[in-house]
Length: 342
Image (cartoon, rainbow, N blue to C red; front, side):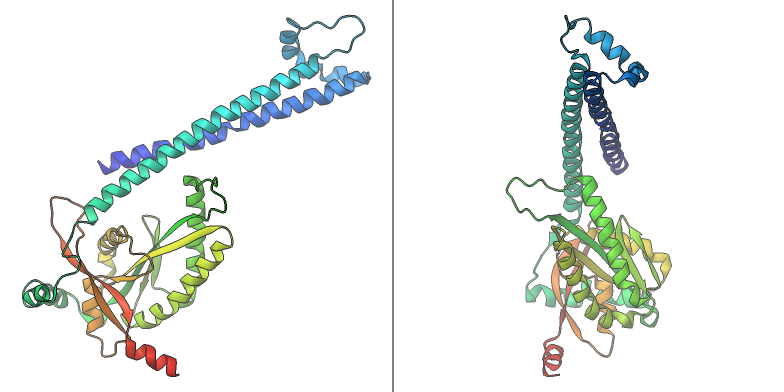
């Protein structure tokens, strides 16, 4: 089903590119009209070498001559008529192609929203979004304790790696009420520029591995203990990118997730889970997985604390329940006060 939906979206994008390429015909008609007016002006001046270019207008001239014949010594307006007709055809073709193009773009946006809603319905089946203290106490020694013991036994903390996935959201800053939204192609172009800027800004941290998962940038760091420095530097980095693209009239916001892995072999599986978390649209918050929390809590020094966001079904199969806790990374008050005193 998913491949069928992707195929439909791909076909719509191909149609849009084809129609966009067909707009070249408009320029052909406009240029031909320009030539017709220029040669008509030269013909009025009785330029002798003009006959050399007669083949350019031979067929249109024969068509025009069927309903227009110059009489007496009056000027011959055949070339001017050809120019006007060519100009009108150019505008008509441009109007038709623009309507088709924007209709396809509208279908692409509707299809994207539909696919996104499907993904949200799969990911957004949360249970106990803000659990009560009694619930937390009851489950501390059962599901949570069991999950933690299983993860710890499977995860040698000393070998953990830091994993980061980020997704930009963008829209046009409208200065007027009738300003048009960004087209699908424009969104893709701006996302590429934003991702390129992210890579440039993260190059200082020398990640073990970097790449794209479903068009979203991910970074892997060899030592999980780098997490405090990473979180410390990433906030001003993202803020600077947001300010930079505002100058271009683009409003950018980010969703990002932090997790931990013990080996590169499970990278794709963990990224798939993190991609589902991105679909929950927690903008501007450091969302962490339970695996991240367990790994981070076992460190001797904590510059950050984690606040429970809730338990969410992160399974992409609606028939399977896979409730997992998600957390928000927050700077500890003590550390904040110390930094202010410094």
